[in-house]
Length: 617
Image 1 (cartoon, one colour):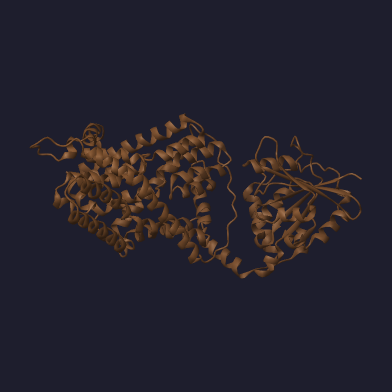
Image 2 (spheres, helix red, strand yellow):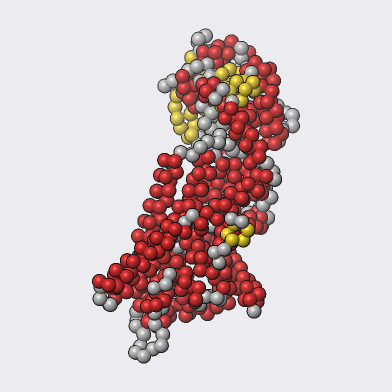
């Protein structure tokens, strides 16, 4: 008897593979499609009538629009255009019963292909738990295809499904030509799916109803972006106000250690290394740990609650205007923690040009390593006063710096998509999770991991860099009777005075120029470098002050503002450039990234320095 070929299609995490396992049992094999790493699962079982039924489990997809490799392979198999697979006789479309509004869109798109179709509403047990009730008969009537409910992991619904395959669709097992009419757009299919879901849903469940009602506000075209940026604004206000007390405690602890070392060690190079090198350098960075934890506490809570997925959709409307979509926002969001995982996360972007564009703009996202630099300069030069109500000026400046990075990234993306990475924007589909209360234990674990990583960097990269800088800034010593400190005549001082000629138009002095060099190892190292440099440059009274106090007396305001702007754009991180080289497999694009960012940093810092100087004249 001729084998009946069935292809299982559905979105990721809908239970499609569980259904496949229950039907085939141990009679299945796993391989890859030729030439790609997409998993291929096939198997068979024998029906009660003795018919051999072959099944293929297609990759989980949200659409058949050929945006990703998974979608392309699924479409090729379904339409009979794949060189290694025969066209299936029947499509078994699996949907999550708890999220019918989203999953119906794929069902409608598959139905337009014109092949015999069976819809399996899986996870019925979860739907019942959430008090979701679906009029299955009405749904079958509206779609014009058989619809059954199942709980694949418990074999519920398998008997009914096998009966349908044996009896009702045997006469449909011959090939039917795909639908030749005009295919609906993604938005049309989504609108049709929502309307159909409203007609067949008897009860959508309390939690799902609450989620939908919240989304009507949070995802509103006007209110959504306002809420999103308001949350960011509140977050940056909290970074300063909530972290102030623990930062003062850490600062006092570092000063106490320096005083203790001074009281018990002779005044020699060991004391200088400990106080001016290690404690001044590493302590200048560790003091910002509370602010980093406050920032990540907000991010972790927003992720756990389900809001971050909504942020991707909110940004999709904006990113569509620059030639990208919300899929690029996920790596960009990761870039707020660190550019390296953000760049690696672009692997989920199938379109090569979109992926390349996203990699090129991720370094413009304000990563956590910039936070010590920002907070140091803001605390030193921006008054800690309120602007309006609870809104503080320092938090407002911090928000502006983050916003400047985002806006600049969008502008660069728009330019690239019209020039070097020209191409049409791809549609964005993503399943939104239900809103839920964050679990405190998970938040604390996330904060612990972030603190551990930060302190490990402080104890390795930053400490080793500051020790090296201390040596370069301490030797050779100043000649006898010199009015300048030792660092002025040291190796580091010589390098700094040379670089000062290059950075003079930005208002940078030789001390700043020195700090930029070790800052290439990691952005926050620049703070440690400034701590070391100014500890070795000042007298005992100055060294007793905090670093922000030292800078306040050493830099004019235009220089401080230019320094902040420099760090918005400059690619001060060798590790990021190394990852760009690995992910793009191209030195050309790596040099392009470093070149345009350094040029942009220099130009924008120069503009700010000149403008601020003119306004203060």
